[in-house]
Image 1: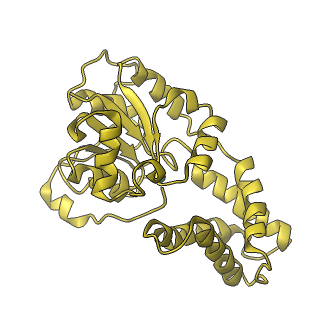
Image 2: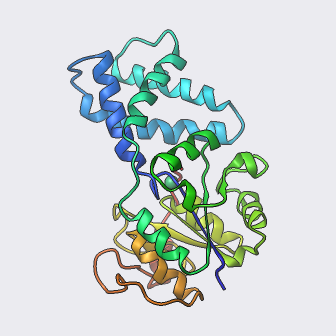
Length: 270
Ligand SMILES: [Mg+2]
């Protein structure tokens, strides 16, 4: 029986890419008007996240230091002068980033639908609590999700460490088998939790794979509106919501073991 659902935050409930695109272009325009590579800045910023956040996760640097590294490399790659105060430069970036915070359109809808099933609905994110909770408040979801779990409250353990998921289940007072984790990162939100007995659900919003998730235990959905159907299939019985029809965003279950061997987990920001 499924008793709780944990949502990843960035790129699952919260539209991080959209905010980054706005911030990267507007911040660059503010320091270098008319820069010829302006439209390449969102992809560069996301790439730098992927490459520098792991050092913080591994305890090799502070949260602030990985931000400084990202700003310095961003400026270097864009041919901009190195900022004399990287912290101040990052603060300027955050002004633009926070101006574009928004939820995905399906987030509130699916949370409200699942809340009617008596499930515990929370968040499991690799971010820092002060920023992640600020995002949830801004996008109107803070009052609908409890608990909001971060590595700070899980002994400093980040996804995809087994200890992170096990501590999260313990915080809920549940066994891992009673918990679903859904998120956009195949390794952090689907493969990792499945290894400890949780039910990982991969939210593949952008259709990055035409086939299937890597193991038969992992469902792939392209919209959160398919999540109630997945939860029902796992053993939580409830009335079918109106969207339980075939079509766009329908859950895809792995069809062959051969397809599974072709897939590789790709760490990404959470
Ligand atoms: Mg994420």
